Image (cartoon, rainbow, N blue to C red):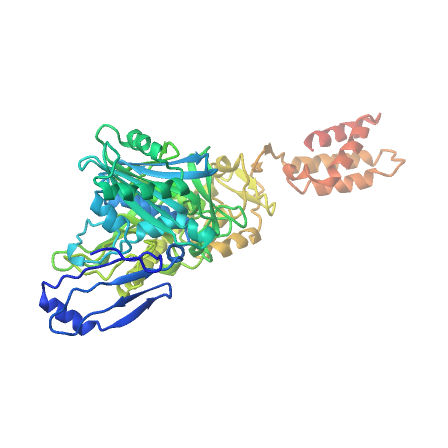
Length: 632
C-alpha cells in the first residue's frame, strides 16, 4: 500500500477490503470497468473484477494542475462565505470557546496575512491526514445526529480557504497527544508558473518539534521548505507561534491566509471600526451580494454583505463562542432579544414524536429605518441565507421593511430524513422539493404577518389623525416639494436637526397612504403630489422648517397694515411712482407664510423701499410703513 506518482501529479492509492463477499457482489452489479470524467478537470478509473472472488483493487485519482483553481471558482461568489467555512470548523468540530481574527504584515513577501485562531481541541494526526488534507468524504447519514456540524462533504475547508487567499497555512496543536501538525495549501505555483499546486502536511512531536521517526522528519523538512518559500512561516517562527497562542498545555488551531484573492469583491482593513470590509472592486462602494439585486433599493446597504463584524454577529443561531475581529469582541445577540411582536408558526409538522420545523417572525424597528428585512435561514446552527427575499417571492423593494423571519432547518440524520441538505459552499440549501415547499410556506407566513401589521398601522394612523386634529399646533415644510404639513410634536423633534420630506416614514401623508394599502415605492412619489395642508382661519400656528423654528405673524394683521399704508400713501406725493409697485408686491407677500418670504426675491426690494419711507416727513406714511416693516 503506497502512494504512486502519475506524471508528477498528485495521486491517491486506495486499498479495498474484501472481507464482506455480499457487499462486493453488490458492487459488481453496480460498477463495471469504465472511466468517469468529472467536469473535465480530473478523471477516475474504477476497475473491479467480475470473478466470484473479488481481488484487492486500487483506485487511482489523477488531479490536474488547475484543480485548486476549479475549487475556488466552485465556492460562493461571496468572499465572506469562504471565511465562514473556517469559522464554522471551530464551531462544529473544535469545541472552541474563543476565536480571534487578526491581520499582520509579512515583511518578506510585502503583503497582509489574515489569521483565524481558536482555542479548541486541536486536530490529531489522523484527522489532519484523512480529513483536512484530503478531498471529500463519504456521507454517512447513519453517523449524523441533530447536533452534527454543518459540514458533510469534506471539502469546505479547502474550497473556502482557497476562495479567500492563494496561500493557506494551518498549524494545529493537540496538547493531549503531544503533537503539532503543519500544513500548506498553495495555488501560486499554478497561478504564476502553471505548475502543480502545493498540498502537503506533516506532524511533529511537541515540544521537541521533530518528526516521530526518520521518515516523518524527512516529510517535515519538505513541508517546511514549501511553507517558508510561499508564506510568512519559517522553522524558527513555528515554535514561537505555538507557544504564544497555546502555551501552558493548551490546544487549538490557527489558519493563516496570505496573498488575498480579488474578484468582483476586494477585502480591505478598517482599523477605525475594527473590521474587515468588502468593497466592489469596480465602484469602490460597499459590496452587495447579487441576490439583493431587484428587491433592495440601490442605496440600501445590507451590513452583513460588506462587514465581517456585522456578518459574524448574525452567523450563529445560538452564539456560544467569543469572537473578536482586529482586537475587538463582536457582539452576538440572540434574535429573541432584538425582535418585537414575535409570533411562532409551524412550517413543517412533526411526526412520530419528532419535533417539527417552526418559524419565528417579528419586527426590528432599526431594520425598518435601514429599509432591510427578510428571512434568516439557519441550518446546523449556522446562517445559510441572510435577509432572503427573492427565493420566497418578495420581489418588491417597497415592502416588508423591518420584518424578520427566523427559521432553523434540520438536515438528514440517522433518526429522520428531512430531504434537506446544505450545498457544498453552505450559502444555500440544495433545491429539493422539501426545501421549495418550506420557502412557499415562508412566503405565506411573511405575507400574513405583513398584512396584519398593515391593519395595525391603519388603526394607529386613524388614532394619530384623531389626536392631531385636536392639537393642530405644529407645521413643517417638506425639503423636496416645499409643501407645508401639519404634524405632531414628536415629528418636529425627529426632524428639527435634519431634513423632512413628505415621504418620510413619520410623515402623516406617508402613513395615510401606506395604511390605504398603497405600495411603498408608489407612496413615496404620491406623497409629494398630495395637496398642501391648509390653515384654519381661527388657528394661530407655529410653522417649522427642518432646521429652523420661526413664528408666523397673523397674516390678517399684515393685510390690515398694508391697507393702512395704502390709505396713507394716497395723500403722499410719490414723485418716482414706486409706491404702487411696492404695494402690489406687499399684497403678494402677505399671501405666503413668513418663513417662505425669506427666500422671496421681492422681499429685499420691498424692505429697501420701506426703509426710505421710514425717513419720510409724512407722519401717517411713516407710521404705517413702520408697522408693515416690523411685521415683515
